Amino acid sequence: MVFVIWQLSTQKKDFIPRVGSPIIGIHTTPDHSIYAVRCADNSIRLISTRSRNLLVSIQGIKYGMIRRSYQWDSQVFFFLIGLH
Image (cartoon, rainbow, N blue to C red; front, side, top):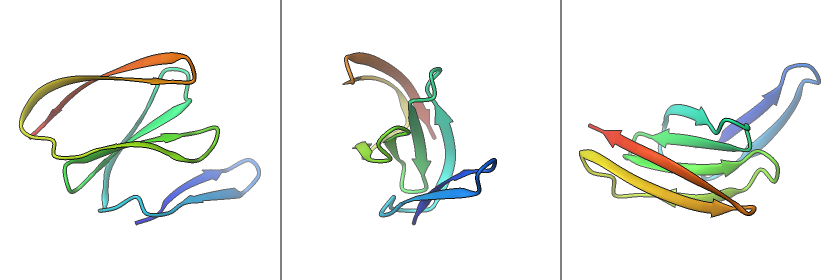
């Protein structure tokens, strides 16, 4: 799967390859610096909007709630994840 960031005003497309399985949902941090991409294999991939790089892949998510924090660019982001 390929994740495409398409800037509608300029028609510019950025392609982020090797996302993995099909994308189920996309969320962004409040400052829009990171995309959290939920995939069909119950994984979440964090993608930087600045560098267009995959920052981390969280795999093996099981039913229930977990809390994870990640530090990136001197900021700490918390994710509360519940998948079923």
